Structures are given as structure tokens and as C-alpha cells.
Length: 88
Image (cartoon, rainbow, N blue to C red; front, side, top):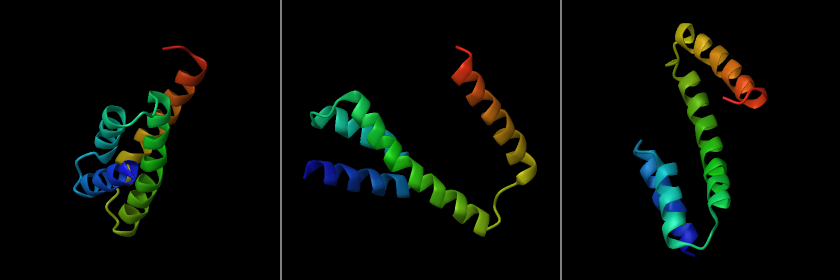
């Protein structure tokens, strides 16, 4: 029951733009018996759908500057590949 309450609190905080994932990790670590790796997995499950919705909403509102976004995406992918295959 308390995990549902933690999800609700972090959802409200995220809707205010203050980083709900940080609050979710903090609450789950401090007040539940869930291990650290599981807490990080829960945070990813929480983060991915909300970020996908945010991307679609920004595309719909035409608030993405593609001139800036393209190099960021390109170097982000290059960085992820380097991180995966080269230990940095």
C-alpha cells in the first residue's frame, strides 16, 4: 500500500516538474525493504513512459528545436555506444 502512495507522491511531484524519479528513489530506499537495484528498475519503469509522453507532447506543440536536438541525439548515441563497448 505504501508503494502506491509513493508512486502517487512522485507522480504529483513529477507533474510539477521537480523530478519525481528522485523522490521515488528516496522514498522507496528509506521507507521500504526493496533493494537498490530493484528501486532503480522501478524508477526506469516510471521514467520511460513519462518521457515518451513528454516527447510526443513537445512534438505536437512544435516546441522542439531540431537544429539543436539532432547533434544532441547524435552525440548521445555515440556516447552510449562508447560507454557500452569502451570502459570510460
